[in-house]
Length: 89
View 1 (cartoon, rainbow, N blue to C red):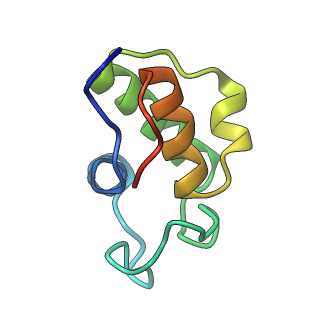
View 2: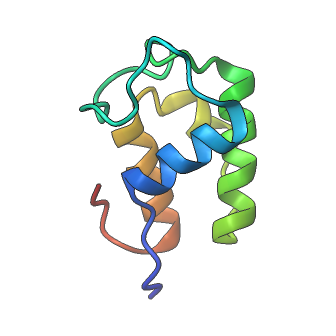
C-alpha cells in the first residue's frame, strides 16, 4: 500500500502550474465542492492537470475519471483510490 497521498494542496499547486488561476477565483478558499467549470478550468485544462498528476504520482488516470470528477473533492478521491490510500483532503 502506498503512503503517498494526493491532497488539495497538491491539486491547487498542479492547477496553478498547469493552467494558471482565473483572476476571479480564490483557490485558497473552500473549493472542495466547487465545480471545476466554476473555478475557470475547462476540459483542456483538466486534461493538462491529469497529465501532470500522472507524471508526478506515477499513475494512469482513465479519461472517465477526469470527465466524471466535477469537483476537487471527487478528483482527489479518485486519485487517492488509484494510489491505494484513503481519500483525505
